[in-house]
Amino acid sequence: MSSAFEHPPHPSQQDHHSLPNFHTTQPFSEPVLYLPPLLSSLPENIKHDLPEKLQVTPLVTETRLPDIDPASLSLHKALHHFRPLDANYADTPYDQAFNWSDLLLPESEEREWYCVVFRSKRKPASDGISLYEADKLAHEEAVQNGGLILYWYGIPNPKTGMNLATCIWQSRKHASAANSRPHHIKAMRLAANAYQVYNLERYVLRKTAGEPGVSIQPYQGGDVGW
Image (cartoon, rainbow, N blue to C red; front, top):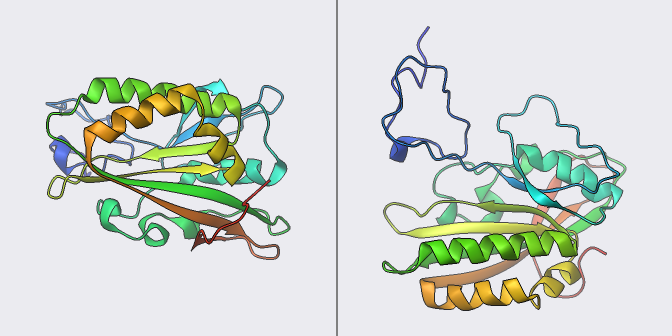
């Protein structure tokens, strides 16, 4: 039986958001980049059961959330299936870039969550190591302080250099509070010097009672979530 990974593709040809098939007699000639969703670890008192039929296995943070509400717990479980629809996500509208229609929650639940999108293009000579370390510390800081459900990041488009990353928060207040934390401030200062383009977009992820699916709308102001 033939397989898409019978002859391992060059890393630039791989879908970096789908788990590679390592069960092959052909060794990979170069390191394989795999970028699953990065979910915040649940509080100690909540059991973390993996959903069935996962196409990808998300990463989880070392730091645990201090708390999470029932609807956000359902979203956390659904986001195990979160993925981009194709490799052009950095240049695609947010509501069309990901598999939102695959995210199903209990019909009885109703809630809104706050989404932040970062579209960026790095300067050629920017210090990627320092920026990565600062971003990692800011991310763990945000989880520890509460509210951050998912952080998803892509890779630069080989033609345009544009990239996309996104965070999904339990509320806008959680996201706003994270902006004033020391590691976040340091990461933002480094980013200001590291990017040619750094644009922020804000959206509302909405779940309506009586419907299993979710929808994405542009943020129009006011509180979102808790």
